[in-house]
Amino acid sequence: MKRVAIFPGSFDPITRGHESIIRRAIPLFEEIIVAIGVNAEKPGFFPVEQRKAWLEKVFEDEPTVTVDVYSGLTVDYCRNNNIGFILRGLRTSADFEFERSIGQINKQMHPGIDTVFLLTTPEHTALNSSIVRDIIRHGGDPSPFVPLGVEF
Ligand code: ADP
Image 1 (cartoon, protein in one colour):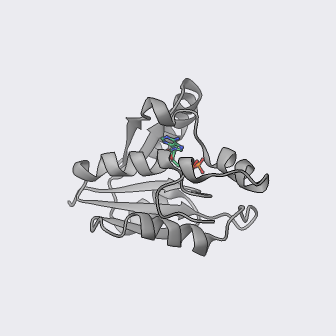
Image 2 (spheres, helix red, strand yellow; image 1 turned 90 degrees about the horizontal axis):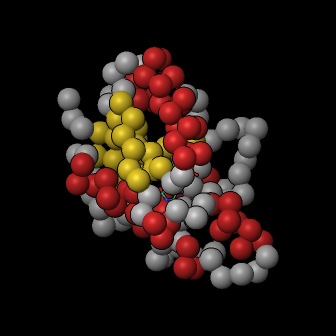
Image 3 (cartoon, helix red, strand yellow; image 1 turned 30 degrees about the vertical axis):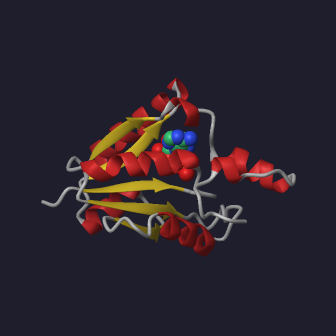
């Protein structure tokens, strides 16, 4: 089976933290699907099509990285698309506790799946999409926190 990973998240918007995890995972997998999870009850801040366009632009020179949008359970998406690995980033011990339960339940629901964690690099530990949204809402400059080429 091909070594394919999904990197699921909201990417609302993509940050340099997300970008770093994906770039570091490129040598590990034959293909990485960056998958924007959507939930009809939580529309998010930026439109999904905009979030997808940013991700596609950032990884336009990486042939093994593709971008998709999905709803429903991540394990179902994995089953339907023959994906064996879920990629996640770990920033803090709080991330670990959260990820541990999701990872263990996902494994129970779909034993063919393994979750692979990469530790965040120190400079990205404090970064998340909600801080970037706050900066934008209040007229600050988000450019140090988002990948090159992402413009608002
Ligand atoms: P979610 O909707 O699951 O919160 P996010 O878009 O916030 O999704 O994050 C998706 C993935 O990216 C998660 O595995 C998360 O741990 C990781 N991630 C988010 N921010 C960072 C960061 N600053 N550094 C490294 N990984 C990050």
